[in-house]
Image (cartoon, rainbow, N blue to C red; front, side, top):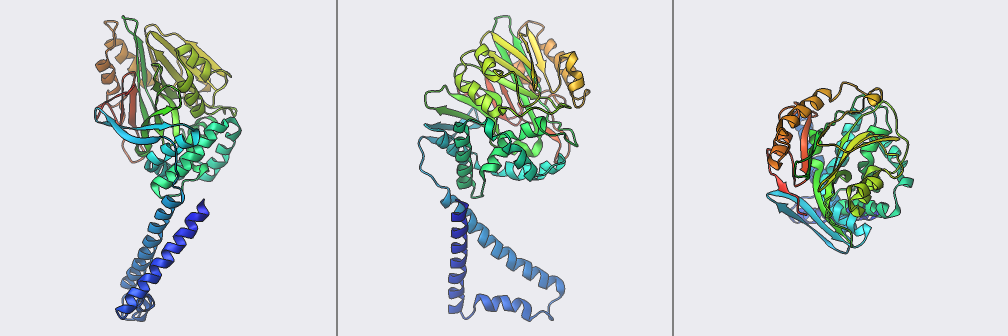
Length: 432
């Protein structure tokens, strides 16, 4: 459909210039005369003034073309779809609600609703990929390796996201752009020997209280500009349970909650080994949230092949059940914590320490978080307010590194609450 955008942009721009020329001629001037004037007085103008005049003309023309390019994309990618989407708020925190009956339409509503996030993520990856010793085009090539591991229904959804984001933002977001965003963590943590370590950091807490009810929660820490790309979505698809998830651009993490009360969170772990190509986590997360009715069922869906796309830790909770999972790409360590557990961006398993890209990374944060949790759990109960207080601990758990590209806490989710930013800002109540 990009050819429609090109045709419309060219037609609108030429038509605008033609009508402008007619208007100016009626007033005794023309575009041609105005342009010639910029050079006629070349000898009379100092160089800086002439340069500013030329820059001004090109900016004006560029602005005209870009405006019509934006309008043309919105026209070219407008679709009639089933269902609907709308932004809602919970306790002052915004989330996108979507209902749809097929995967393309679900993707289209997602793309249109998150158009700004997705377009911004595209350009952030263009820039940040250089920080990781690669470029955006190599990320596209790596992302294509996952196509055969993505079921057709989710490929339809990605196409829908692409067209919805293009219509919503007025900027062209290709299928490849959406694919890269969907698997960028697989690329960075699983398929690339990075020249620079990726210091995305997340801290997760889990407990089984003395009333046998579980409570878990985590912060998501990313490069701070990526925080603007994040959003929460609650979607209803056909007869599946409601699913509430956190997205970074188009990337769905195993971080969310479904209508059956399954709550999950994840901590990334950077390794010194490459992962095999396998089903991306966004597919595993979607399948687990849409199908699972209990923690064991959720675990079985996630780890059916005993092979995942990158190193991580995962907590899965529901009512009185809690599972802690430490994951190498081809080895899974499953535990039943009793009564507390802390996950960060490292492994508790001592025999896996030689697999870490940086064996010292997150160790101090892990120890600090364990100390905080043990102190809060002295009465054998962790309350919601105590959990939020743990997630708000500055500067180690709730992070805000200096500099534009420093890491910071950009979102949080617990069994009952969620928010963009930190727990010191709005605290939404999960609407399921």
